[in-house]
Length: 254
Ligand code: G
Ligand code: G
Ligand code: MN
Ligand code: NA
Picture 1 (cartoon, rainbow, N blue to C red):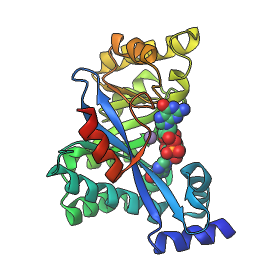
Picture 2: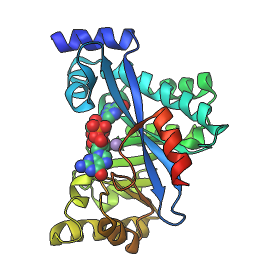
Picture 3: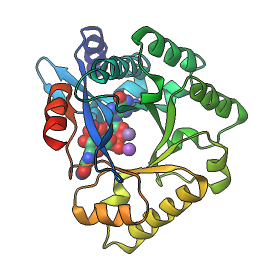
Picture 4: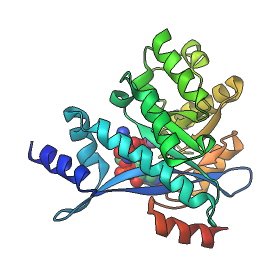
């Protein structure tokens, strides 16, 4: 409860910040986008990682205002960057199941786009596989409504749930994100290699792009790219960076 109250105050006092982790387009070798990852700059505790406060935010319902702030800040950053050297890159925003299941979610997203003037085509919402486990027509209608706003959808943590082929086919998603746990022991671990290869074949068959997270070594990258992975994210390129640091990184990487 102490952490919950501190977090509530932290949100009000503007103590949240976003860091951005670059995603590299496999074909061009250039930055194609970033994943926005929230951090909490606590006045006494310093930089608190999301693993320590996202669960609290989810249990308390604070994830709703927190998630709305994250979405709006990512939209504002898209606007700031599009006329800079960083350019019109895509920003991916994590959406919690609790946010997505609210009836006002599509309106909240529409207002964020409208108020900030962000280019919807440069905003991607990452929804976890587990949040879409049993998608009924109502939830699929909600996904369709989000797509109608012009943004794109990615299925996060792919492989950790139990997606079936028929289920994937019904979802209006553009990308799968291979969970970092499957990338970690590539290429030597036979099971992880099987899961990632199968995911890449499945995605190709369904016309979906794939981004792999947790890419740390050239061997992991080569394994993934050889099998058709479209984009790569991980410490091999960069850890998540504050906006100004990302600008410097882009200048040095190009
Ligand atoms: O940045 P880091 O790798 O420490 O993130 C840890 C976890 O916190 C990740 O699983 C990530 O999905 C989650 N996370 C980070 N930022 C957000 C956010 O803005 N919203 C939600 N719902 N989860 C986030
Ligand atoms: O939501 P998710 O946990 O998938 O978000 C990405 C998390 O993974 C962040 O906490 C980020 O700091 C972390 N991360 C990003 N790239 C790497 C990587 O290459 N290796 C490892 N071990 N962690 C990473
Ligand atoms: Mn994510
Ligand atoms: Na993830």
